[in-house]
Length: 319
Ligand code: UDP
Ligand code: MG
Image (cartoon, rainbow, N blue to C red; front, top):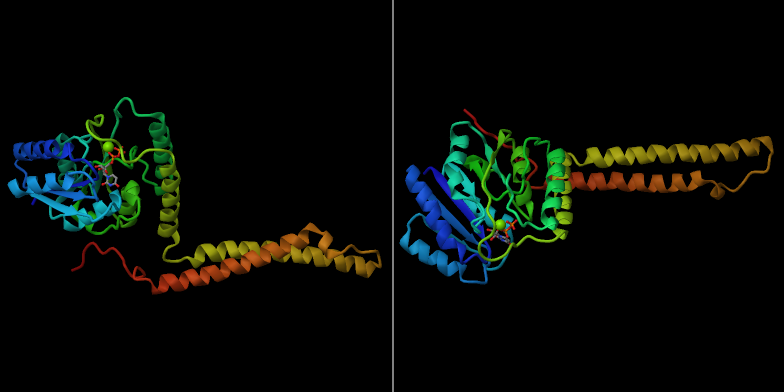
């Protein structure tokens, strides 16, 4: 099979028939063999009924129905698990992403040998509120810097194409759908490209991702992703390093406090209480923090040693 199209959706009943017809038209025109996997993420409207109807008339339509709303990442995860096409394409259900982009994306994966191609909403639809566009710019700049994937402008575009082996070897969880290119890179899929795509205003329903708080969570996710990809298999390297640093600062503070005291005693001059010196408090804090960080490092090492991930390496080929 050439292509699996995965569509995560939450309350998008109006869009689904149009979307299906559009995808079908593009696929037939290009003679692709394909499947469409609709992942209904706990919709409370009639989305699932619409999917059942589509599936009863079209053998290429498959559906997965979550019992409740888990989020876009879990929906993608389950879709990825089922995908059988050589190229896997994800797209939003709201008709904002254009199925006309499918042949171009397919070509980039199959002919130009990209592992992952992300859409780039260059002509972002007009009328997007500032609370969406400004944070999006900030978000992408940070994600570029942290992930080291310098050529992506739009990490969070719902329209993306992957080699099948990519989606089988990454684990999208929580709200990590924003960072799939980073997940892919960490799994060793380095050839990541971008394609400017058409983007339209939402026709039906409303956006499920609004407001500023998602960016706080987004940054926290990015931070933990960076941490795990850098130190996940060797946590002692970070905890031990910072712990040692603190311990050294603490040690020299102790020496300073003790030295001042000793010097005064030996010279018979009146000597102040050690607790009057700021070095005393620095020494105290740093020694305690340093010890704590070391112990945390040991614990983290023990946890990572017993985790199922510990010897989970990406092997692309073996003979
Ligand atoms: N979506 C989902 N689960 C959720 C929220 C959203 O499956 O909990 C789907 C949604 O139905 C759509 C896609 O994710 O197909 C992108 O959502 P949306 O269009 O609301 O985001 P925006 O385009 O406004 O960033
Ligand atoms: Mg949308």
